[in-house]
Length: 102
Image (cartoon, rainbow, N blue to C red):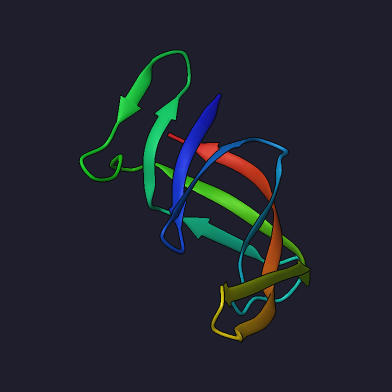
């Protein structure tokens, strides 16, 4: 059984017991979060919503928060003596999929 959920403008394929790194949101560790934006769910047969599957939700448990690896953005314009180096570390909230309710 799996579901496709929407969070932070991105889509994730999730199954029960799986760990995910979602965009950072304010939540305490060990708290439960319900996601009702379920785009599709498959439990033997595929149900696709328009835009969301009615009555379906995915329950997530917050594990911790953290930062990803550094991403470096380097821009160089040849023969112009111009270069820019920037970087950032994306903050995330690590969650575990507890249950998928159709």
